Length: 247
Image 1 (cartoon, rainbow, N blue to C red):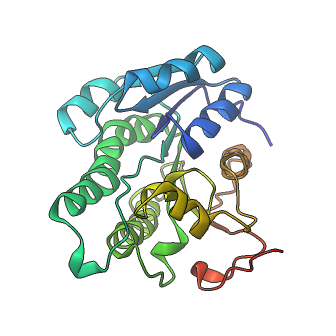
Image 2 (cartoon, helix red, strand yellow; image 1 turned 30 degrees about the vertical axis):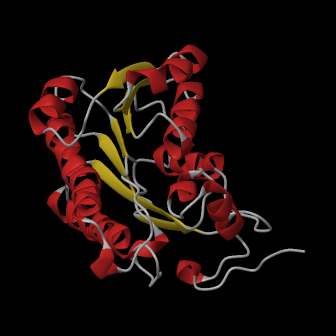
């Protein structure tokens, strides 16, 4: 397993969680990494730690994305950025929350693809990794609109493989179950309630686990495309329908 064919990577949603863990792994692998997030302040510590190139960018703005990413000749694109909103029934989801999910999870992903994929095709080499979710392929109550956007990412990943057939550009979708990123803490009425619901007593995945999976698919031989990888905690059944609580 080697990343020698790749030189430059872009990671969106890089300021925390899976994104930050992936930046760390890619830097250890020797790649130049552009860490993308909305707030430059959130990227300072990561840049100081890893030597990544921080890039404050709102990926929902097409012109800004094209200008910032289009000339980087990136070999790797990790589409990790995702909006998070409070859990509700589908018909109760606030319009602002719907806009945030559609803008970041879908529009932002498409904007990054528009900026990066043409260069990959022209060079005949590249790897796109889309971060999906088990909520996009298995029913999960409480996060319906978020799950809808992740279902769209699943469909997009499959379509990308058709669009890029024969180009030499690989596409992988990583679909995690519950990961202790802290993101779930915004999904309930209070952080205390959310931690009790999602983390306390459960053995969940860590961001580093997903980052290592990303490194695996990137480092696979060029003849091999790990097109889809679902990763769940040992104690979690498909789609989060059942989760064993320890102790």
